[in-house]
Image (cartoon, rainbow, N blue to C red; front, side):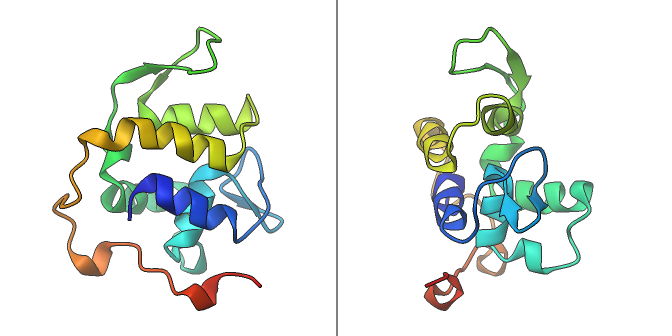
Length: 130
């Protein structure tokens, strides 16, 4: 599953939140992706541990090139992850809109990204709220 897909799926699971991966039953864009993979149901809620696991599952988060904010605010962020957090928290983009932006830069990422099947996100339809 690509990061854009995980963000969209997680956005269906909980309302959007800001400034935190998970707070009060709300998730930011990266928190939504983590939720879609079941990472929020584990003991990985320590940010640095969750961050490392997310980077293993979503290779695009290992892109640390400086990137400009697509909103045109002249803010440069380090990597895709930094831009996602900025768009979620500063510009209050919806997670679906953030997923659309992420999808525009996922083209370089091959489907076979070297991550073994047991590390990929596998989501059961039963996990989605009714």
